[in-house]
Image (cartoon, rainbow, N blue to C red):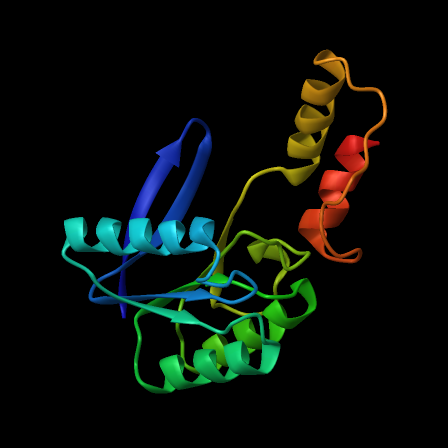
Length: 172
């Protein structure tokens, strides 16, 4: 399903799975009605096209069950890899387990499942790609403070979601 690429970055050696034919992007909590996520998907499609990789983008419209079923269908239909932007932290692991059943490599992006690939008891989860939301929260708060604001209301998302919780820690 994929070729291995061995890389060395500084003292760190890694093996990366290169998807050869079909790469599937899943977008869930991120509704395509929101311009930012439509642009993200369009950029992903353009990147695949420039590499000669076929891509499919699915939108679960923020519904965990829909996203889980999409992952099951995609894996059952033989996709070579998935970039998964999970709707909820807690549901990502169950989707990784589905990918394990079909030997489909998964890159998790946007929101962390709460564990690293090395801590996952399976083979599908090959990478997490995302920013450090705690630092982002700090930088946002600092920019407001530096601009003279002293009363800040933080509305960073639903409590208990890794992205929102990390931004709030940074804000504190």
